[in-house]
Image 1 (cartoon, rainbow, N blue to C red):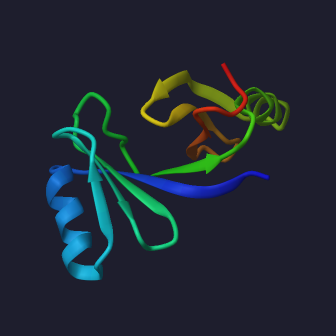
Image 2: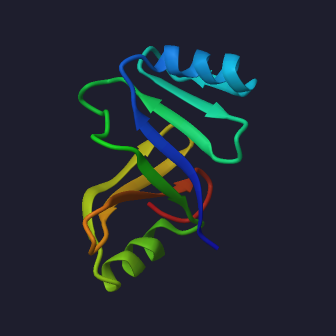
Length: 116
């Protein structure tokens, strides 16, 4: 089953964003270098991307799946267009797509599950 479990936000300072959610809500943050922080504790993991070359233009909703290849086929069969080819990152692989209404989202698959 595919579920929304992650939203990535553009940030001017990933570390400042992480500290904010720790202090304001008591959530836990994990830094993946100077430009990326994950924040957990609100039911959906939040990511803050400060690298100008990687920073999304708007929040990016990310859907978790167990089979990245099958998800891609389903996205394309339903009229979605892949905008970023699958790539690896710490913990898994993902691709981005634009749905017919124009919103960009991503699908990810954790390391150790199906997908190239």
